[in-house]
Every structure is written in C-alpha cells, then in structure tokens.
Image (tube, rainbow over all chains, first blue to last red; front, side, top):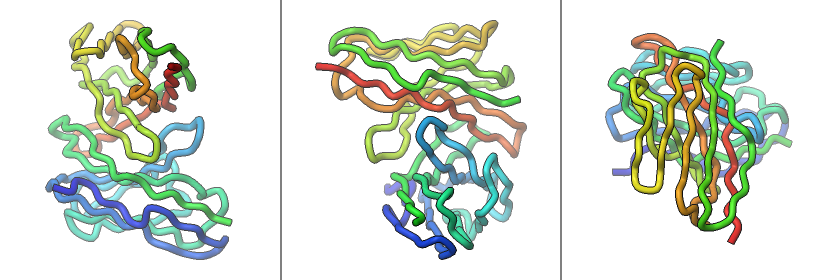
Length: 113
Length: 113
C-alpha cells in the first residue's frame, strides 16, 4: 500500500518555464489537496478537490492550475514559473467527511531561478 | 476568519517535557489535530482530540484542549532526540462537502542531548 505518491522529488526551473507536479493515491480517498510549505508560514492550501470532477481554489491559487484526472490522480501545473513559487509542495488526500486523517506525500522541492 | 497560530521554535533538553501551544479560531471544528514533520518528509498524524474532550493521553503524548480560550497544547513527556521535528496543529473548517484543513505555522522542536 503506497499511500500518496508524488513526483518528482526535486526540480529546478528557470523563470517562465512550465511543469506539472504529479500526485496519486491508492486509498480510494475522495478529497485531494495541494499545499505549499514556506519557512515561517506553515502549510498554505493552493487548490483542493473534494471529489472526482471538482476543484476549488485554496488560499494561494494564483499562478497554479490543477486537474483531478480521476479519483486517484490530482496534478498541479505551473504555467509560467516565478521565483516566488520556490517552495516545497505537498500533495495530500483524505475522506474528510468521515473525519479521517490527512495522508501526505513526501513532497517536491522546487527551485525557480 | 480562519487562523491557527503557533510559536515557531522550542528547544528542550533530552529527558525534559516539551509543551507546544496553539490557538485556533474556528469553534465549529469537530476534531483538532497534531501532525509531525520529520526532516525531508511529509506530515504524519501524531494524535488528535475530539472537540468535546478536555484531555487525551496517548503514551508520552498529552493533548489539552481549552475550548473557551480556543487553546490547544501538546505535551511530550521524556522528550527524546527522535522527537526533534516540526509540529503542526490543525483544525478543520468549512461545511460538508467542502471541508478543508487549516494548519498552524508549525513549531520546530529541537531536542538537545
């Protein structure tokens, strides 16, 4: 049982480049999330998907897009990367309506030069 | 508004008790959570407390909840070097179908040998 799998683990981009962060979960969870973690700011929600076919903006959505491809997969896309998007990105999943705990991937460390 | 606050750093000596504090704002949260993040890893659920409880004990961990003051604390007894990590408190905000976690800024616990 792999849980939440994120790829890649590390990525370096130049300003203006695009990339997609991939996330998949094998726990049949309805809800999936993308967070970014910055020093002294904790975790901030970028986008979330409460169920397959739906996505909603979180606290800091600007500069990002998401796709809930199916129940398992939730991808995060940076269309034109900026240095302010240098961060550690975490994908997570849960069945929050059942008050289940949040399961996290191991993170993607992204640097935008 | 939704805001969860924690102090950023705590340093204790091995064998002493650690107390990590948190204040939250959403009084409708059914559960309150403590997550632990070890270096280079995602967050993992450490413990949680149901909002109608005052205290929960789980081996070396004691969670205290003061609903009137919206104050949550995590006490770690006999703190070990392996407890060095970042600890996040979290509450759940929103309504059914749109629940989302709200995390604090995280407290970095450093255990000195």
